[in-house]
Image 1 (cartoon, helix red, strand yellow):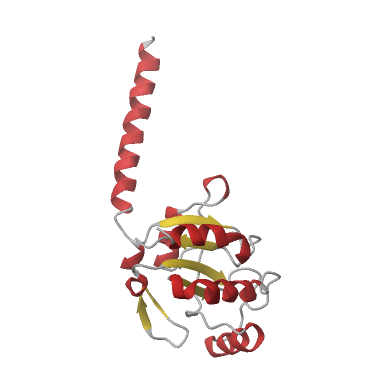
Image 2 (tube, helix red, strand yellow):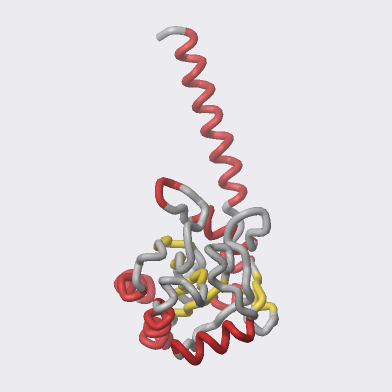
Length: 188
C-alpha cells in the first residue's frame, strides 16, 4: 500500500470520526426541546406531546395537496384516543400557497375540512429563517438522496412516543398510506 493511499485512508477516517462527533453533539437536541406558537399565538412546548405518536405537517390552503387536510383529520379522529397527535404548520414558502392570516387559515381548515387537530402559526421550513423545530426535523429525517430541504407543502414527519423522529414522507404520500406506520408506533 502506497504512503499516499495510507495518508488518504487515515485522513478520510479522521474526517469521518470528527463529523460523527459533531453530529452526535448536534443530535443531543430532542423533539421535546422545541416550542412553537399555536395558531392563536400561544406558546406550546413540544413536551406537551410526550408519550404520544406525533405527525408534523407543513400545510397550505391553496395547494394541490390541500385536500390532504381531510385525510389528516381522519387519521387524527381514528387514532387520537390511542395516542396520535397531528400538528399542522402553515407555510407560505411554496408558490405563495398560504397567503392568509392565522385567523383565516384556522377558519378555512375548520369550514372546508373540519380540522380539529392543532394548527400553529405560519413558519418558514427552509432557508435562513427556518423555524428551529423544522431545522431539527430535517436533520433527523432527511429527504430524497439525503437532502434536508423541504420540497413542497404537506411534507410529513412521524415522531414516536419517545420523541424520536422515525420517518419523513413526501407531499404526495396520502395520509391513509401512513396508517400502518402509525399503528405500529402506537402499539409500542
